[in-house]
Amino acid sequence: MSRSPLSQTKAEAKRAFLIEQATLCLAQKGYAHVSLRDIAKESGVSLGILHYYFASKEDLLLAIISSYKEGFVAELEREVVEAPLDDWMASFFAVLHRSLTRDKDQHRLWYDLQVQAMYVPAFHAQVSQIRNRLHSLIMRMLERVTDADGSSLAVEKEAAASTLYSLIDGLFLQSMLSESSDHKNAISQFEQTFPFIVQSLFLPSSNVHTSTK
Amino acid sequence: MSRSPLSQTKAEAKRAFLIEQATLCLAQKGYAHVSLRDIAKESGVSLGILHYYFASKEDLLLAIISSYKEGFVAELEREVVEAPLDDWMASFFAVLHRSLTRDKDQHRLWYDLQVQAMYVPAFHAQVSQIRNRLHSLIMRMLERVTDADGSSLAVEKEAAASTLYSLIDGLFLQSMLSESSDHKNAISQFEQTFPFIVQSLFLPSSNVHTSTK
DNA sequence: CTCTTTTTTGGACGATCGTCCAAATTTGGT
DNA sequence: ACCAAATTTGGACGATCGTCCAAAAAAGAG
Image: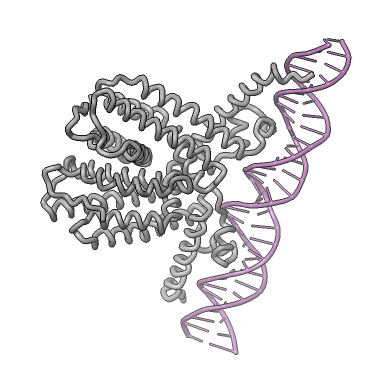
């Protein structure tokens, strides 16, 4: 009889391990310069294993993107939801700043995958799904703030969340691109302008917290 | 005697032609999926030609990036500088909107090259140079507006230009990523929020034109 | 232990990559 | 027309890619 009901969890665990290792390898070298042999060597397994757990390289990439969603986005959702409501913008900025400096390679990989999704249609659905989750995450955060302190948005919720998302995306990209030359400068500008722009999304008549300390 | 003084211009013309064809091919397939044979076939020349005019593939890529700078950025500079000062935001948005819909593949390539520059150090200098030009372009535009209608910026020029750059970058990326699903939605949100955010960069006491029509 | 199933290995396969070069061709000065 | 330089060709080279597979090794049920 089949042993799959018992060994299935073990197989999935190994599959998850391989996805994790592959993500690390991919974050280091980038989509264009990584090979299945790199991933296999980095994971300490043979090359054939990857084709045993994943049908093809494209299959592995899709699993990596999906895993990235469950990891990074879930963590971000938890941190944002659990963030204190008083001085929320400071804590929100702190989350972004910490993620930007600590998980730099992960974010670089995220932009890489997004760009690849523009060329490879097979990646488009997964990437779009993550972006939708991030978009709704930002929108829920905005709702949470407006509900708490009675403030209101200057534009409709969808537009405000979309704008804030684009701004954060652009600021992250800028901060990562200016690596050695003026990285700290970009970070400080990030810190200076981010709360300012966010504040402008709200109506000036409301009592929004703007402190960043 | 060497004929180089005369044929040099001809050689440079062919070099420029190859760069142009290579840019087109690269914009279609993306950095990760393009080969020198693709470029050669698309250009109607043999493979060896590319190594006759370019030392290596990396050399060709650098030439492409440099050519991209001279093309797109120069055009943008001309259009922005020549833009009318009255209702400047409307014309500025029009330039961005038209470039976003017409030169879509070019912009996609630009994000691709920026991401690759994060992995390949050899590309970093050229990409950073273009970004600096775009940054100063935005800053000059802001200066031009403030000088003309006597308004003033809410934050320092550097920070304002940096923020505006990041916002445009993020909006472009968002608009391109949401291709078939809600592309027009992203465009309309772009149109709705962009002048709003730009306006918030200026002090509310000034008489800034906010119309987008 | 025995046997079936699952897992893993190491290598082979054809395709394609960037690179390189000798020979053929074209070009332009004299 | 002649010749030397510049240009172009087509193919070869080794390396590496994703894919695939037969056989060995490991694992668990009986």
